[in-house]
Image: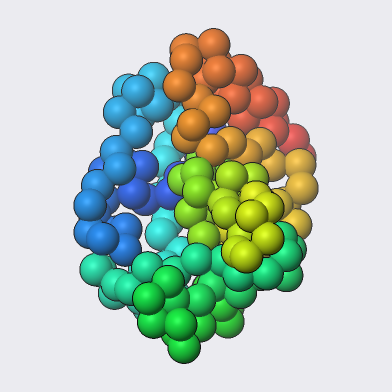
Length: 167
């Protein structure tokens, strides 16, 4: 009998996919090499999933954490908030199994607690990360910046394995 690997969602850019607003890659090699073969990756880019192109105008979060809007940095009339929230809800409804998630820090979609909110200067979660945390509060979540050492990766993997055994 083959043992199943835990399913770990991951911001697609961290796997090296060129899905970021500037079409550059942000592969998290240390994490990928440290966890590959022990988890099954489930990549997602909320902005691409919401129909935004690559490259695309940069957006940032404006307003208080938990109630922010994703608006254009240069094109101030651009507001992609609803598109991102609809994608997050649809994606969460369709995902059948998820045991953990690694998110891209400082992203207006995927940052877990490092995303700047303007004009307050506060830091909080991106829109997708916030929806993920609300929908699955027991799910182990980390930003890639929190998984740079083997010890951090092993601790996260242990949490993911514990979560994968839940009924």
